[in-house]
Length: 298
Image (cartoon, rainbow, N blue to C red; front, top):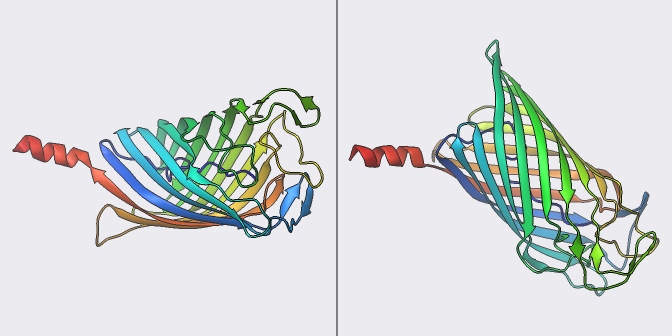
């Protein structure tokens, strides 16, 4: 039921930013749910009604080399419940930084096969309250991620598969006693780690990308289920599988400008909301290499 990290547009695809190119832009995302899983039991809660989350994320990707990129993202978020007395929260969530490296590339009869390694780290950027689910804007955990990814493109058709291990630090909450499956007399909460799996396939050219996406998030040992008629807790087991679509179109009239859009639906879950999410945004590529060459010629 917690807000998920918003990933920069090129973090889990088989596309690299060229050397000295910087792609930046903003994405607006809207997500809502009125049913959730309390453990494995799917239910409604009339004291919450429909829970909505809005995000505006600023993202960027810079090409250190053609095979080594640095990606960042920082979202501003706002939550709301249509019923009950719980007030929504708003503020900046977590700054994420990802290093993406293509360590192997081979053409098989003119069709590229490539392998990538990604390392990411995120930290909270504001003093938001984590122990206020489902309306908190995040979990306030420092998160390290290591992902391996493979991408293959046959003519204009492609497939990309990746898997990541996500390690999360302990968090501090504003109470000294809490109950999970046992009583804890501390304000420290040990966060369970997670496995993230992502697969996508579709049509890809230099101007247009259209893809179907499957995404799975699985909490590792240490989590527990929401107890009956109780609030969620930051260290709950939070599992989900999502299916969705993404699209990107580079405008011919304005070179460097791209429109992106997409959405996803949570198919199955455990201690999460069954959300529908839609997003759209604009990105622009700045070519610093061209500007540097022009300056040197003068």
